[in-house]
Image (cartoon, rainbow, N blue to C red; front, side, top):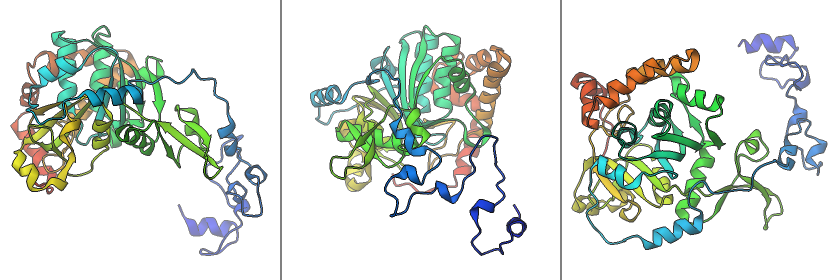
Length: 407
């Protein structure tokens, strides 16, 4: 954009304040009121925002939504607290296998909290095992599921793709989220297909809002007030509520706590009791695990409890919040894990190509082939990794460039 040229068009030298009503707006849409200074927040001389705000945005908080009465998509705060109180709080060995963990904790009708963020430190090995046990081995039934997370990519797409193949084995009915896509290479094709086809119920929050919901759950309180969402279209797409603050008398938007039945997370390192270290961004993982009534954690490295006690301040998830520990190298592949490996963009593209064939052309054959190659023909997650080959995994480790971790 040539700012100098644009300012010249309205007769204002660059660096001088222009009359905003005269600025040539580029993104004018027919029927849309262009942004002007009149849309800005009112000054002290105006007591009613409606007198100064022409966009009507303040009216959003007064919209009466024709919604169903609020229901918890998972345990309510009292139920979650009661379940956590009953847990064994003593130190005991929680190590198990991926298969046994999935068979123990995954069942129909539960809310699964998915930790990680987009392509970073996602619980890929656990999601792979859920699909393997439910779709291929038929040892568990992962139906009538709710998924709760901040932002995800292929791990959730794996579950949705399995639903496209056999919804009697894997079926996601509801999703509470902020974002579902692959960052620079585009949206999640199966997610987009399911939303557009009305196959899934969506409760949409900002990234901060989703984090705040898990934070409330981990703190054992029923809701969290936030400064975003309110006064924007976000009020229309989630189940938060605008209230009058009892202390200031002003409007405040509150979000319900989120309590998944089972959290699934991948961490940098853990001991056999479930004390977890995380390096790089935390990605709301401590809050998601802390808010859940049970949790499965995979770790790149299993370390000793003596090492945990050597640096106790590095423990981001304490053992009482963890139900099962599974050591799994490359457990976050094909995503990235700080200090271990970068993400596999080629594999993401392979999935998107198969998914887009279904979404755009109705051709499900490439999706079936993907599952044949990466699930049915593999007995374990290590078999899946072996298909990618040593050279690819070594390349991903090199691309991480040795980001610092303390093991």
